[in-house]
Length: 127
Image 1 (tube, rainbow, N blue to C red):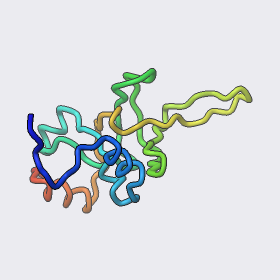
Image 2: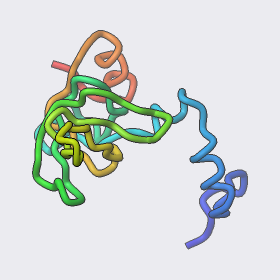
Image 3: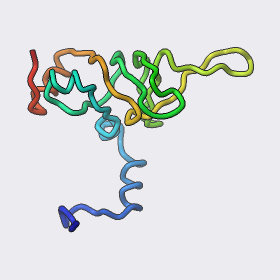
């Protein structure tokens, strides 16, 4: 397939540089997660930037199938922490596990006026 746009580079090196040196405002969009089938049908939107208090399901990795609420979004590390995903240190303390948002599916949205505006701006419907 031919290139879609001659103005955008498809060079792997340039893509990786742009991804890893992206500012926080761009990382928000890069850290989007798909919505579950039910939410997709309800809001008519495929994915949204992930945020604290969303409820998610892990769909990849060793913690696949576990659900929980997002406790923090760590943009610098491209990671989110889910409240029920923890591991125990040798000292006995439990620490949260970092998960990339692409390995999650949003099952319940935390909706406020800004999120509602975003869904409507993306062409979705809001009941």
